[in-house]
Length: 279
Image 1 (cartoon, one colour):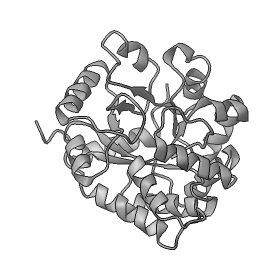
Image 2: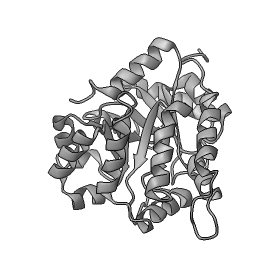
Image 3: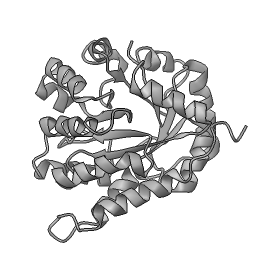
Image 4: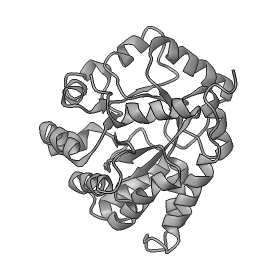
C-alpha cells in the first residue's frame, strides 16, 4: 500500500505543528499552460500545503460550472495529459516536498494508457490520484495498480457513504480521505459545521488516514472552522472563480491574474487553526 511518501510526510508535519492543512485545487492548463505554470509555481509559497491539479476532461460530470469551464478553457488552450505531467515535472525541479495529487476522471488516464500513466506520473513527481468515477468495485482497474506502483489512491467519501459502505470505500485508500461535504456538484453549496464535524468523526472511527474536507469552502473563516475538526480543508471552485474573474473578453489572462489567485491562497491559509481546537 502506498502512503510512505510526500503526502504522509506533509500530514505528519502538520500534526507536529498542531495545525490543519490547506489543499488547493486548480485545473492544469487553465487558462493557458504558461499562466497555469505561474500559478502552480507560486501555490506553496502562498500557503498551500498540498496541491490538487485537475486533469482536464471534456465531460467533468461531478463538477460545477466553474470547474467545468476551467477544464474547457484548458482543453481549448491545448492542455493534455502530457502537458499536465510536464507541469508537475517543472514543479518538482524547484520543490521536492509539496505533495501533488492529480484529480479528475478515468477517461484521460485510460486514453493515455494506464501503465504509461503510472510510469510517467511517478517519474514526473506525482504523489497520488483522485479518480472520481472509479468506485471500489473497480479497484482492480486502476486503484490497485496505482498503489502497487507507489502512488497514493485517495478515495472520496460522501454524506451518503454509510457505515456499511465505508469499509469498502476505505479498504484500498491511502494518503488521505477526501470528504465531499455536500451531495451534488462542486462549488454550489456548503455544509453546516455540525454536519461536517459528525461526518469527520464517523470517518475517523473507520480509518487512521487524515481527512480533508472539500466542496463549498470559499473563505478563511470556513477554512478555520473546517480545520478545527478535520486534518485539512480543500478549496477549488473559489480559486477558479478568481481565475475566471481575471480573464479579458477573449478569455486571456489579465496581468494581475496570478497574483490575485495567490493572494486568495494566502488569505485562505491565514484561516488555518489547530487540529482539534474545538475539542
